[in-house]
Length: 439
Ligand code: AMP
Image (tube, rainbow, N blue to C red; front, top):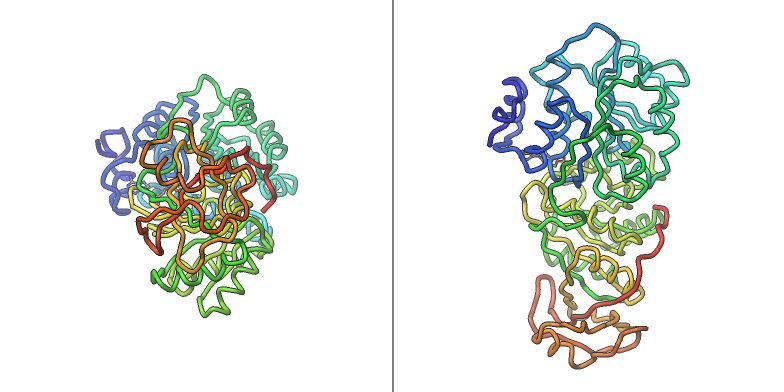
C-alpha cells in the first residue's frame, strides 16, 4: 500500500516522500480514506503511530480540492499542550509544502499580539490550545464561521487537563455543518460522552488494541530504594553512554531536584514542566534534540506531544499515578517502528502503581536489580495462581502474598543478567491505580 493508492494527491504524496515515509502506517491506512470520504472519524491512536499525518494529509487534500476565498480558518486543530500544538503546526507545514494552504499556531504562555496579527492576515489551518483560542475569540481576533473541519487531537489529555469547558464553548461557536475528527489514546466514559455529542455516525478507527504498549519497546523494571534512584540513574546514564534520555518524574519539584542532582554528577540535564516559561521549554527541547544536553527531565503533561525522532531510551524515575500515563510515556521511545527501551526505577512504595500498570498492559515486566543498588525494601510479590513453573521456581524463596512488601532484603532473586546490571528479583505488586496527581 502506498500513500497515492489511498487517494492522496501527487503534491501530498511528494511531501511524504520528502519526509522519507515509504509506506503509510496502520493508522494512516485507516484514517486517510475515512477523512477523505468526508465522514466524521473517531480514532483510537497513541502518539508515535503517525496519527498526525493520518489526519493532516487528508485534511489538506480536502481543503485544496475545494478552494475558498475568506479569512479562515477552514480547519481547526485543537491540542492539549503548547508543545503538541507547535509540533502539529510543524507537521502541517511539512505536509503542505506543495499545496497553497496557509497554517498558523496559537497557544498560551507567549504574547498574544503577534498571534492576533497572524490571524488578521488570514489562514486555512489553525492549530491551537483551547484556552488561548478562547482568549483570542473573546478579543475578536478569530472567527469560526468558516470552519469546515474540526480535529480534537489527544482528546483524552485535553479532558485530563480540564479543557472540557473551553472545548464545549468552542464547539458551540462552530458552524453546525462540519467534519469532526476525534483522536484519543484512551476512551474513558467522559471521552465517549464527548464523542456522542460531537460525532455524527463516525467511522471508527483503531490500530493497536487499546492500552497495549508498543511492541518494539523493550520494558524493564529496576527495583531500587527511592533514596538511591538518582545515584542509580547517574550510573546508568554513564555506564550505558546514553546520549539522549527522556526521564519522567511525577512532580515539577521532583523534576527540578533531579535535574540539579544530575548536573552535580556532571551529566547535562534540563527540566521541562508547566512552571517553566514557554521560552525555557522550547530551548530545553531544542538543546536536547541537538544533543547539547543528555537528559531531559519531564512531567507527564509537559512531555505529552514531544516528538523526538527515534528516542532510544525512556526512564520512569517514578511511576505515574495513572496507569495509562505509563503507556503514553513509553510511547516516546520505539516510535514509528524504531526499537527502544523503557526502564522504570521502582521503589517498594510504588508496588501498587506497578501492579496497576501490569494489569493494564496485561503483562508482567521483568525485574532486574543492579549490583550495589539492591533495595532494602523489596517490591511486593504476589504469586499468580497460574504462574508458569519456571517463574514459580524463581519466586520460591519468598512467595509471600506481598501485602506490605517491605523489609525483605535478599529475598526472591533470579540469576540471569540483564542490561545495565545484574538481573535478580522478579515479582508482582498488587492493588488499584491511584488518583492523578497534578504534574
Ligand atoms: P505521530 O504519531 O503523529 O506523533 O508521529 C510519530 C512519528 O512518526 C513522527 O516523527 C512522524 O514523522 C513519523 N511518521 C509518520 N508517518 C510515518 C510513516 N508513514 N512512515 C514513517 N514515519 C512516519
